Length: 181
Image (cartoon, rainbow, N blue to C red):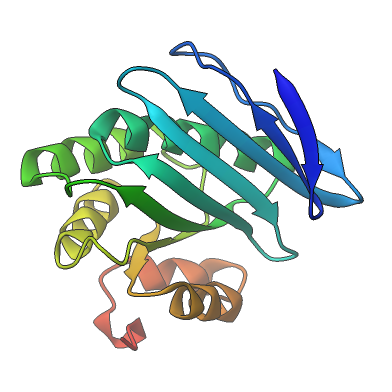
């Protein structure tokens, strides 16, 4: 394992074994973690950057169902470790987009395994197109408080606009009036 401080974050690079947990570090008073997984079928890097109101997650690497499922497990773990349940996920995975069956499976399994963990997830994948709305619908129908956005600026604006408490849940109960995109 190599650890290297970078711009207010701590970089952790290692080879992964499926099921191995991520590492969390503090650097220069700013919570930041970078997880790098390298395997034959699973290669991705996750950067966690703690903001005052949310956890920003940037994911790079190969686009496949295993990587998406795995990085979502990392996100759940980091949210619990950092006691932060509002998340902006900026997915920048390379390669062909997942098909309908994989999107359905990943969104369904992810929603079920993270049931009750998140307050809000703003999800950005600029290459996913209309499939992001499908993934959003599948996850919401399974109780995941997620919303897909075309870019990180819109996602961040939405996360910062949320109010605490019961009113927040109206956003995820099919209230199309809450959509501004």
